[in-house]
Image (cartoon, rainbow, N blue to C red; front, top):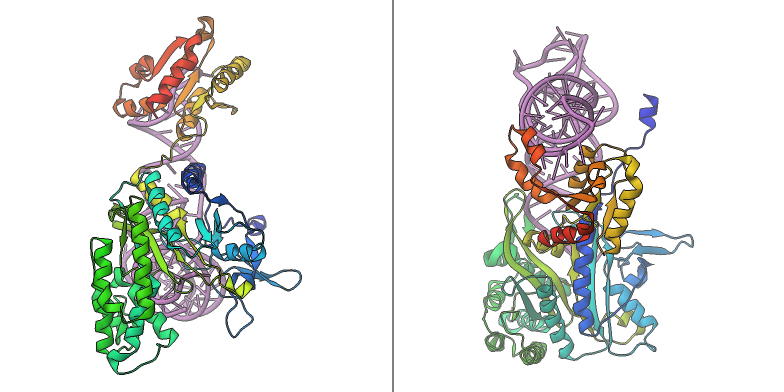
Length: 499
RNA sequence: GCCGGGGUAGCUCAGUUGGUUAGAGCGUCUGACUGUGGAUCAGAAGGGCGAGGGUUCGAGUCCCUCCCCCGGUACCA
């Protein structure tokens, strides 16, 4: 009793996961495929530490010497605030600032790894998760942004997402700012710039378009909105004319990129930043078109907002457009799995001058879960597809030879090192995802033969085992006995058959 | 953070107006079947009801506090 009380309950932190071998393997395969695309465009790997000084991450709260509540932070032995990185972009800007004189410019790097955030976990949301970024630092050219879109498109296709099952949407924060300028002035008789917090609130509301619809956005911009749980969300309190302006903007759609640009012209050309934004998008369109990327892959969409703080120009996101049914049979959309944009101001806090930069980031876990639902990643392959069983433990040396023979032939093979009987060995093989079992007792040995059991076939046939198990066991339809010399050949055949 | 709904075996859940040793299905394990996983049959193990306090002769059932989970919402670099 006392001992029971003293025992430690195994627990795991909220939002953190243990990942089994099949998931880790699937993720590694996915990462390898993505890396190949990034490298095809000349990006090189970079690794930075998991821990950074909080001020270098830029996450001290204003008006306070406490770090932002959204990050995992603590004081180190020198009393300095340190924190786990919450993305890969902040460490990149720190790295660039430290090495600005030695880096080739433009500097292009990719980085993959875990990041940590203190957020409420939900379906597909965790406190520790992987991101896979690529960024171009030191180029203000829209060619870099256009390339980012092409890479996002190629990456998704390289992962097996069919054209049409995804879309890269592009917008420009400068266009958005142009609209905000108009909201701020003339049309209301007011004038001057919007209060930054109001501007932010407007962007936040626009960002919710997907979720709450155009009517919802209008409510959020006006007096506020009551959601279905009864909670009231305070509105931005814009005037009706201002709301109408935003609505007009959001309703602009076009199937072609140039079509959207012309449609936007009337709304934002009165604004200098707005015109600049349109011009940048025009350059991106030209580069995309020259690269052979049509609107079926990369489209312009005026409703894209993305992260609020640091984007300064083009913003893009890659979204999966198909629906899936989750475990409860509920229809779900995966939505955005890939996002990025231009952030010309990030290095400034270190160097005092702007270094232009643009890039994008994959939400690895979300995309992986989408690919799993798509059936694009197999999750049942064992690292070694073959188990060499030990029917007769006195023949172990012979079994070791068989295992070596398979390995020498390039086939991963596991020798059963447990102590249980043959029935349990098959169970073990079946549960650990093996494709085949090698069986050899004194019968086979005497005839220079081996038996090879096809576990997957056996699993299928077993549905009709029925009552007559005796006969089933005698026939062993999923098992073949072949000359020992044909072992490797036969196993290869099975592996080919089950992919 | 806020609103709503929940916490009873590994899982899904049942537990009458508070009343004797807390149940089922699935899963697990064992055996029939010591050279064959998936079928069938038989049997076994496994929880003291999220935690703590209170009311009561007596609480999984009532009251209070806290914790956790789920859904929605806010925030999200």
